[in-house]
Image 1 (cartoon, rainbow, N blue to C red):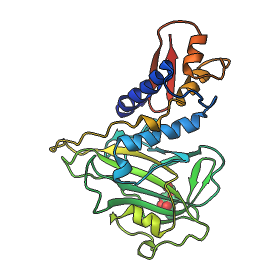
Image 2: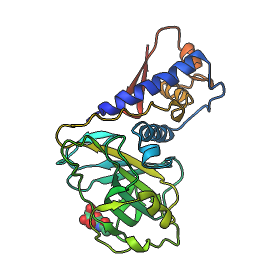
Image 3: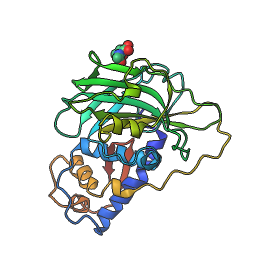
Image 4: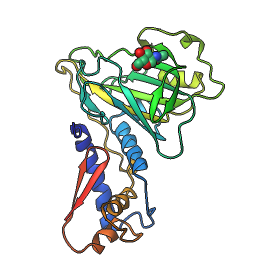
Length: 285
Ligand SMILES: *[C@@H]1O[C@H](CO)[C@@H](O)[C@H](O)[C@H]1NC(C)=O
């Protein structure tokens, strides 16, 4: 699957807004001359979490330091943020690819999968815990679970029929060196149940989520009208992303200015910007 409909629908306006801002020269007069592709991906996934309402409804904030991509065996490639999958496709646990924005991931980590429900659903009674594993380590961008403890083993999504597309989020935290599982979640093989994921993170002294991603799974046809998603916060994808696109699209850097400079240096013309999925941009004349 090349890209999800969701990604193309939500990110294109964001990218175009940033692009327009850069072209009009109304903002971003001093952009960084280079933003790494990995940082750009993290900004995109951060925007997805906000646009899908996961932030702030389910998580108070989300400032990812690493990219977390789920790879379901039934999918021909990695899942993209918000990708809609069937229950059959997600019946078995995915594997993950974890890539830091910078530095390395040498600690010990907790991974959870929780059901934030359909957009607009009440989060005050907690979320369904579909997976909770402590003690993961990361080797060559993959999780190693040789010293991990599965508090709750992976249980594939099973949203009630007609309840709309549920947002299943994968969340990763770094554990403190003194990590001790909270008493209520210290024994392996607890069943799927509702819990307060943010209170869990606090009790386990995990700090902020360092990486996340999400998929949607829907059973049957929604009988309720889904709540509209919040307007995209363009601030989460700053215009500073544009020079990355322009500079990376060129064989040689065209200067340290913003996207408008780089494009006008290439010659006059009408330009379009195409967003492919969350992360790949192509500028064409
Ligand atoms: C470790 O991974 C294997 C293979 O995915 C899985 O069968 C096993 O349950 C996992 N163990 C823990 C503790 O998560």
